Structure formats: C-alpha cells, structure tokens
Image (tube, rainbow, N blue to C red; front, side, top):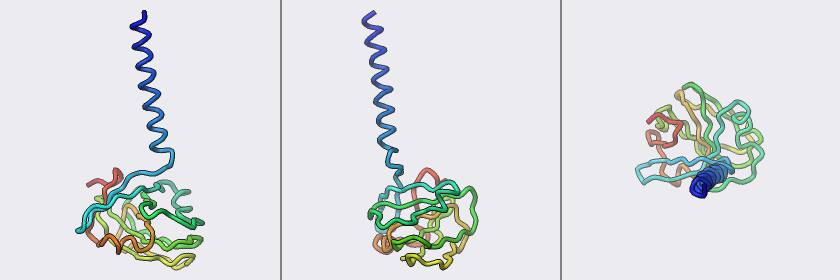
Length: 153
C-alpha cells in the first residue's frame, strides 16, 4: 500500500511540476524566435498576434519595448498586407516574411503615430515588428531566415 501511495505521489508531483512549468513559460505570452543573418543568429521573444483583434491592436499605445522583444503577426494565407503606425508611439522595423520563413521585405524605422499606409510589397504570411533600428543593427536583409514554429522551413 505504501508503494502505491508513493507511486501516486510521484505521478502527482510530476503532473504538478509540468503544469507549473507550462504556466511559467507562457504566462508572459512570449514565444522564442530566431533571425538568421550573414552575421549570425539573433534570438528574440515575441508576442503572437494570430487573430483579428490582436492584429488590429498590435503594439498600439505602447511607449516602450525591450530590445530583444517584438510582435509576430501571423496570417492564415499568403497575401499582400498593409500596416500603419496610428497610435503606435515607438518607431518600429517591419519585417515581412514568407510562409517558408524567408524575409521578403524590410521597412526600417516606421514613423510613430503616422497614418501612412505601409505595404508589404510581395505577398507574405507574417510580419515581425521589432524596435526601430534593430534590422540595421543585426544586418538583416531580404532573403535572411526567420525560425519559429509558424514557418514551414
């Protein structure tokens, strides 16, 4: 009977630890993402905008974003998309990405609070927004790769 009790306790403890670890790793709502350039691989933590409401809200009304953070906008299909910076207070680099995780266009330092429409150029499956100047700082170019489970690479 004690053996069964100990076994049950171990299973319970393992389940509890698993639940606690899962809650702590996703509690902040961030997911790891890597960008691979000629200069090396850079790691970021990104929020995911995968539904209409989160894509519409984006990074609006934020006054700060950590240098290694960003937001990944995921779309159901490849298509040309457009963004604007209305109610967005921080300059952003917009990185347009194909379904294969290949960078198709980079818009550097989008002007805060602007209602100017920023088109993707070629169709894309996702857009990554990072602090303005990050793309240049890491040497990001069209053709570089983005690694994240969303992309089929």
